[in-house]
Length: 247
Image 1 (cartoon, rainbow, N blue to C red):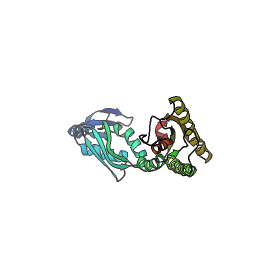
Image 2 (cartoon, rainbow, N blue to C red):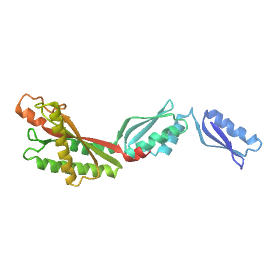
Image 3 (cartoon, rainbow, N blue to C red):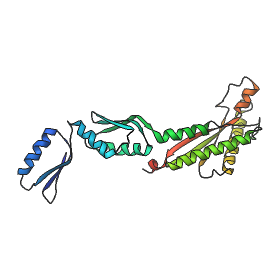
Image 4 (cartoon, rainbow, N blue to C red):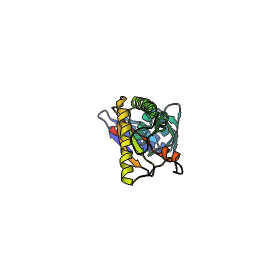
């Protein structure tokens, strides 16, 4: 607890103290020379958790979908809330008198939940390639077009909630050929996809080509059909909260 006397003789108390102490202090302050009043608006009774919880609700203004619970100086949140509210709660909760920690294991980030739908849609796309080349197999150009549309939808949704999108394009091969040749081929396949996405207007996001070679097979190679499925590219989406990065 901290005390501060202003030039009007008002003694301001901030922090936490026992409830009975607050009551007694309000009486005694009146007889202290130079003190006209004890101001306790910023003083919380630590043995009255309902007061601390009420102050937390006022400070954090949680949405109706969030329930707050106080236990042993820890404020627990449960329910669903937008990402921006969660970021603010992490910062502000520990600054509230009577609260030391904020826990959100039972919280669902609705912003990320919505973005995950778009992210999963993008990551399901895979482009297949002709054996030994970085040229797409027949019919794969339409897949590239659909892939670009899905990426655009993700980028637009992420931008609306201040998220940035980074995509790793991984090139894959089957196990035939040398390691060096497969890595070169895999890199070329990844770069082919990036060029295709750029040509369809996706110029503002970070696209990184990664040659994975045969190290991440989609199928065990028992047949030629299995090997054909492994001659492909895959996408990995990385979402970053731009505002949280700025602090």
